[in-house]
Structure formats: structure tokens, C-alpha cells
Length: 327
Image (tube, rainbow, N blue to C red):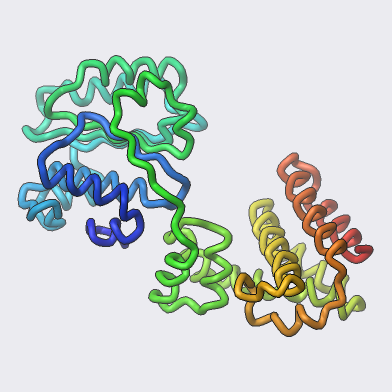
């Protein structure tokens, strides 16, 4: 679990160090916008910022994590920190209104106040305009922290009132290194790092037996398509059981996509880019023409799109297997 500025700066050296400098110099903006992809550390940084602002025993920029304020933030039971999340698909005007009402209560404990808005790009037009009025009359003791993966969806008038901090995608090598430090095998670490940019999500994947079994099934399917066509129906049956949910099948197809990319890398002599390193010799034994590999990549992507369009997933997979067999 990430709970120090040092850990955060290892993930986001530029943005986090800028925030640390601001806190160290007590130059706190009334509003921040942390923008970046999923899993880049935005929420962990927002919580760390809140702790640094509200901690009663802060040492430099680092919150103590043990005072009453820090512990109440961890427990989600501190009235001076309010977190707003989408209600369904969007953040409603009433949620922003409730936030304003909450912070205007005289019963709030004397201290700085912080609110975090997750997925700020999902605010309705009315919610965004209500927040804008809140930002236009900033209180010296209140700090807003907005989080978004799509800053272009946020009103320019809101952006102009925030200090924007960009969170870069995590380097794949860094993610693999952190997973290996948690005792995850190289093969699972490398695969998970290609499927998500989030360390927490990748760690959950790797610790789930389903994930390792899924990886093995994808390799088995690839092998059956090329060398053991007699077992293809048996493998298909196992796929149907293991990838029963729509999201599971999408992840299985993502793995299959990575395998066909590996086949292409082997032919191009770019073995250092392989995700399925342990299957290198198997890939080298395949007699795939590059045209067939490119066709397979196209067919897998098309299958993913059809599943997203709610076409019957089992039917889509069966048709994909036929196309992969035909080349």
C-alpha cells in the first residue's frame, strides 16, 4: 500500500515532487486538478495531499499517519475531508450542493477542509456550473482536488481555476519490478503489466488463480490452432467455462492479442519485446506468414468490438476460432 510521498514520487516523479515542493513552502492552491490515466496514482496522491493538509503532527511534508486526523482519514470518518464519486454514471448537481452544505456547517471541526472529486469529467452541466460558483469564491481554509482521466471533458472555466498536475502512464518496467518485489513470477508480472497500468489491479490479477489458469488456456488455444487441431473443441469447451463473463472473455482476447503480437515480434527479430517469454521456442516453431498474423490481430480486435456491441459472446468466440484456423 502506498502511503508516503517517497513512494508516490517513485511512481510520478515530476508531478508529485511539484506538489511536495508546494506543501513544503506552504504555497497551497485553493484547487488542484490531477489528470492522468487509470492506475497512475491520482487518488493515492489526493489522499496523501489531504493528510498532509490535515495532519496535526506533520513532519516536513510527510503526514504522521498515526494522529487522530490521519487515522480518521484512513477510516473514512473525518468530516473535514469529503469525497465525491459519480452517482451511477454521473456526478449530479445535488451532490455538489450537498458538498457545499456540508462544508458550510458551523459544527465542522476547526481545521483546513479538503474535498476530492473523483471522475470530475462526469459532472453534469448543472453540477459543473454549481462547482464553478464554489471555486469562484474560494475559502482560504478549503482545498479542492479534482481527479480525471479526461481533462478535455471539463469546463475550461473550471480548468483555469485549478493548478493542473499531469500524471504520466506508469512505465511497464516499473510496474513489473514492483510486482516481482511482491513475489509475483516474471511471467505473470509481464502479462499483467500489459493488461493494466494500475499496480493495485495488476497485483489483484496476479494473486487470483483464475488469472494464471487463463494465461495457460490462452497458450493452449494458440498451440491447438497451430499444432494440435484435434484438441481444438476440447480447448473451446474449457474457454467457454473459464471465460464465462463478458469481462473475462475480453481479458482472454486481450491475452490472445498479445500472443499474436509475440508471434510477430519473433518473426521481426524483436524477442526482447515478448510478453510470453517462456513460449519463445514454441512461437519459433510456428509456420505463420506475417499476413496471417496481421489477419489474426484484426479478427481478434473485431471480436472484441462485437462483444462490446452485445453480440452473443459464445457465438463471437466460436466464429473467431474458425477464422483463426482458416488463417
